[in-house]
Image (tube, rainbow, N blue to C red; front, side, top):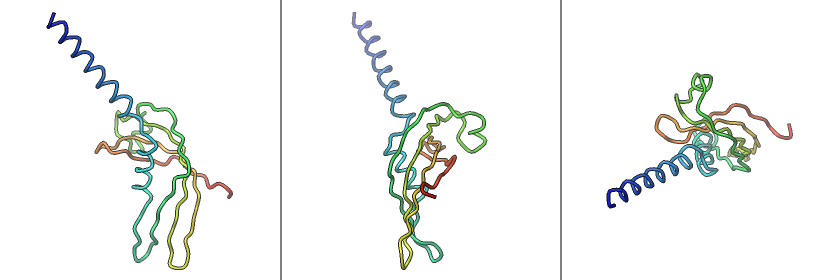
Length: 130
């Protein structure tokens, strides 16, 4: 009786852990995408370039799939789960005399890099209103 209980308990724990990992570990949240975008786009000021920040206007998360050969050739790690996303954001460049704002809408692949951090690879950008 105790042996059956332990077997069932072990199975439930394994399934719970696996289901949670698949559900949250392979598909990024809007917060994950925002953090990855800020890591990629935001820059401190230098002698030659202004400080750059971004404001996220909207994120639409698309479907996920294992990386294909073409994505791997572009630098996505082999076997990574790639999620497509449409990201509407505004880039703010802070010059001495003005702040320039440029709105962009980018389509991107979102995946975990070799360090298991969320990464963004831009696959196309449009400039609304231009």
